[in-house]
Length: 443
Image (cartoon, rainbow, N blue to C red):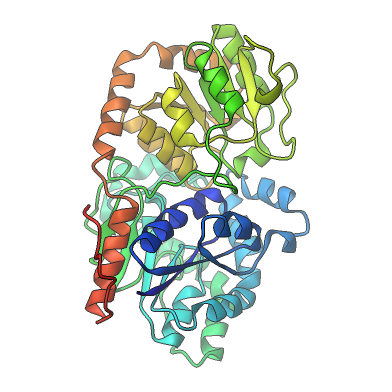
């Protein structure tokens, strides 16, 4: 049995893949430890998993909701995440992760868990790096659409040599952001590193690509130790809840609805998205489900909560529903393009309209568009009229619907969490650590 620390940072889309892997590792007899924000303690422990709090916690940001809204800015969002939400807390993160990792056999880390390499090196244990989305591979052969510099998308055809130079320039301009990390490394007595913690933070032993090759195929410049598993899917709430009964009743009462969701971060910056979505559905004569987020975040006039909706209501709202149960029963899915929501929508095989906000979302949206399974609508262009126009075309496109279904079928052959667990166990075996008797699952 191995003690395996999984360190992650961010929204539910950044947590759920590691929960899926942790549950698979636990099923095989290992002792996974999920190390992340204190906000997720109940969610993790309710699944019978060990939890280790790692700062920053959400309450350390003066106004978490306002911080998340700022982080969803199209141009500056990623810089806000780094400079305001991650880098000021490196010392606290290091201390907490070091405490959680004593006695561990391996650390599996998120791309923003910048202190994990220091902790792994200081404890002399192997580290497994991960990428949840194609953007995080920073490939010169398959460059992403970057919201901070959208004009770069017009240069996609320049080729790998030009993009290698652009990535090198970007690294040189941002390497100074990580001086605190360099200082921590020196303080811990570790040798200096010239690697860029974000652009070149891959482990040299195992790098897990936790997204489907349907979203992005392997590239020549991916690390040699890369294993692409497909999406490790998990979508249960804090109490492990399934489909709410009221929503189940709604779904059985009529035709498949259009599902509108903004995930767990963009939902804080929704603006008129849900009101416009409801109006668009009405104008098309379609039923709709609005996943509006917790705490009365996005009330929509004239749309009742699912739990209190009169029989025959065409549109209902609720905070959340498991995507794996709801999305396959939709006629179309309108979402923000976050990789967790994207994974669930792709696996559901339904037509998509993507309204990207920031970070990797525009790149994910563009990839779906290129694959012919989605339309894309700019966030700044959202209105009842524009949503209705795009949805009308989407719902009439039988070829797009067929491609979405075919993609979902191909994804069912990807191992996901089981593949990630297989790769981690193979690394442990190379390190001479005995595995549980039942061994790895097939896949």
